[in-house]
Length: 348
Image (tube, rainbow, N blue to C red):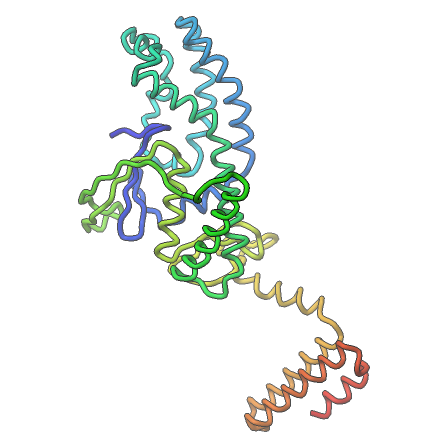
């Protein structure tokens, strides 16, 4: 089946997504859309606003001229849509997309069916145009919902993995259900999407020659696929996370826990965020440390060096560190001066 803007298929299997002859780890497509710049969506708003009156005029006039004028505006929309994540890799029937309106006008029977408001053809045409009109906003809604969920419910997690993600989503789900009941008098919060599914064996696109049992799923909306990709990723322990250094989203796989991505760090020519992020964070913490915290850090490092060299027993090390922590807290509460803190730490 050829893929279209409003009807396309992908295959799921082995914790991966297959389409366009490529393999994607579960969660990568939704992560790519989280990182999508706002500019293409804003550009689409303007181009779609220009298209809609022309498409309406086409159905009123039913002339070749109106068809070509509307098609020019539709093609300007496709020029942006087909560069977006997922659509840029699907095997789309682009020729039909870029010639849709002239083909419709040239086929009198198809045009007549499209004009019949009670026909399936009219419903399909209206679905495509309504989908186009709402398309940029649907991506904004997806990004806003998932970003909020990740920031408020997933970022505070001490551990990463399928179980931790399930617990975080359970909290989110309950909060959304409560909010829906209070604000909208809704009985429950749901994340459900209409799809068509069939199971089939297929050759793995990685050209390994392996056969995988795949679940081919047909979607009629890009965001329905993105939500499915996102939630399936959580089930297997994958989740997007915002890099603590550059702010872009990256995919944590199989419960791996790090705050930094592997992209080139801002201001660097070779080092990645993962290489420089932890050092920069430590430097920021040192710069903002109180005098008491700085004195404690010096004492801690000195005591640790003595323990590592065998000049202090483990019991003495534990006692000295506990005493140093107590002194730091006294200084922070103003019970002893910074000078007194330095003197007593030096005596440990």
